Amino acid sequence: MFANLSDKLEAVFKKLRGAGKLSEKNIRDSMREVRQALLEADVNYKVARDFVKTVEEKAVGTEVLQSIEPGQMIIKIVHDELVTLLGGKAVPLAPIDKTPTVYMLCGLQGSGKTTLAGKIALMAKRKNKKAMVVAADIYRPAAVKQLKVLADSIGVAHFQLDNAKPPEICKEAVKHASKNFVDLVILDTAGRLHIDDELMTELEQIKALVKPDELLLVADSMTGQDAVNVAEQFHKRLSVTGVALTKLDGDSRGGAALSIRHVTGCPIKLASVGEKLADLEPFHPDRLASRILGMGDIVSLVEKAQETVDLKKAEQMQERLLKAQFDFEDFLDQMAQLKKMGPLESVLGMIPGVGKQLKGMTFDEKEIERTTAIIKSMTIAERRNPRLIDGSRKKRIAKGSGNSVQAVNQLINQFFAMQKMFYQMGNRKAFKIPKDWSGLRTT
Image 1 (cartoon, rainbow, N blue to C red):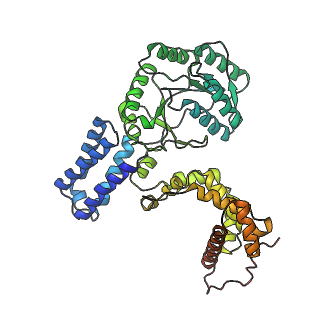
Image 2: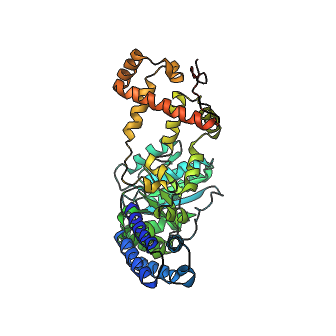
Image 3: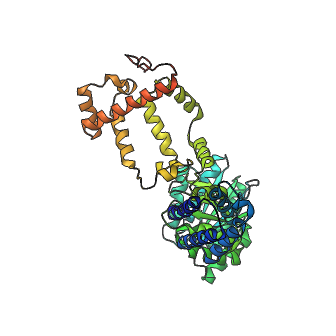
């Protein structure tokens, strides 16, 4: 989302590094470019103005001017101010410490409330909490059915009440949850314009009846400045306790994420970073600031890996890799685990320094599918010992996977090259390839 902003900020910092020495003039010139970059990213103009003013005041100082690496000092100041702009520190959701705890979702139509309800329910379920989603959107066609399908797909409870108004539905849902020992109730209300007084009054009635522990405004990051205006109006009417930003994986300019906290004073608590129900993260201002400045986000990467990767398997795999004992079955398993972590471009972008190297590169997800198809067309014996694969076997594998013999050859050659590299890494003595690769499984 922030690719364009990141590129422009990087260009500014590059000029400063090239200058060698900082002066008031080149700082002001640079800050003018930073302000322009923020405005082009759809950041609120008052926010951009205040941000640049603060950075400039901190940058023009003796300590900075005499710094050995002044460009790096500017990056640090910008990073720190971005963190402040985004809220300073992560603010968690209300704890699920009573039965039931109630989260209420509100926002415009199409902002992603129903999907977010499913994502929050899944997040709660992974923490061993019993969650229930409530269909309080009776106006949008198929909204009730959509929520039920999402609930069924992740195995959480779903509540609906036919021929009833939303305030009554929410009230009865909380009663039902209390009787059935549900830990978390998530109210999916209908999308509405903040200028629709009748529907806004309905939200006020729901809030008064159920007294939610968390009232989340769901804001679409791709709507830019309008998301900020909407957040401001919803906050005035309902006193929302937090904001959930959706579609942060999109290709929009991302100004809403940088403006909404500053303008409304309301903390951003959640970030939806993908289409899958597992693609939901607590919002961390420092991590987003690092991503914007191209510093990566290794903490989020580690957390994502911990959620999706079997650590015991990973340790075993490390041993097999360094002994050149890994095979195509291991390779298949690793690709499946990597896929769970999300798009490859997104995962690699979290590694510090790698994001810049990826500029202009595209990752063909179909290539991974082709590789998977080739491996799955092999027999178990062939996967465990690729040396068995002769010409006739290659033809069979190519035909079974819908690929060419050349593609099969290429994969096998790449596999042996990778195996050789890891074997060499695991042996500090002079490298010698075993003739029969006896480390491979043969059964």
